[in-house]
Length: 245
Image 1: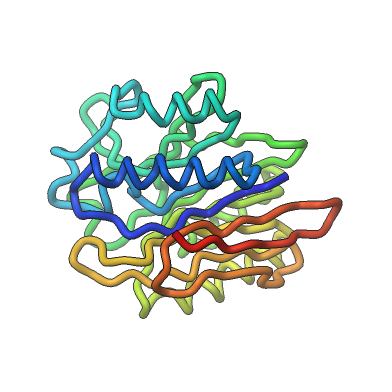
Image 2: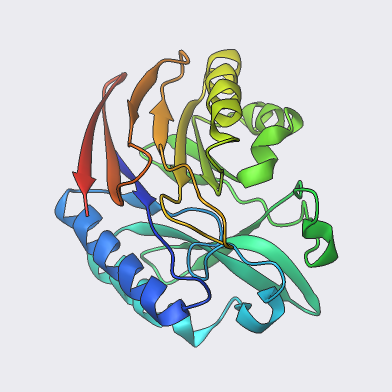
C-alpha cells in the first residue's frame, strides 16, 4: 500500500489555479504508485470563511470532473477539500473521489471558534473506506482537537486516520502532540496533510507528517516546501519518501 499526503500552497479563492496544482500532484502521486492522495483542509479554494458561500461546491459539481477522470484513469482515490453546499447549508468538507466515479463526502464535525458563523458542523457524512483490508477514516482540522473524534474512529476499527488540516506555526506543536498520542493510544496509523503557504491571510505551518500505530513519527515535511509525503506499507513496516514540488 502506498499513500500520499499533499502539502500545497493555495492561491486564495482561485479555484482554477488550485485545481491545476491538484492535477499536477495527483499525477506525481500516480507516478510513485500511490493508491490514495489526501490534500489539506479546503484545499481547492484555500481556507475561506467569509466567501465560503460564493466558493462552495456541490456533490455533483462539474468542476470535479477532471479529478474524477484522473481517479478513474489511474486507479487512485483523491481526497480534496472545499466548502460544500448540501441543500441550503454550507459545510467544511472534503470529496473522496473513487476510481469507479463514485464520490463520497466527509464533513467537519467539530468547528474551530468563529467558523460557526459561516458553516454547520455535521456527523451525518462520515464514510470509512478500505484499501487492502485497511480501514481508513477521515478528519478535518479542529476535529483533531477533540479527543472524541479519534476515539470514535478507533471504535470503528480504523487502521489509518487521515487528517486534512490548516494549522499555523503556533498551532502545529499541539497538533503533533495530539496526533502522536492518538496514534499510540488507539493504535492507529495517522497521516496528516497541511498547507505550507499562506491561506486566509495567515501563515500555515507545513510539516505534513505520518505516525505509525505505535505513535512513532515515521516522516515529516518541512514548513515551507510544497510536494508529496509518500508512505509505503510492507507487512507491518512503513517507509517514506518526500518529493518536493
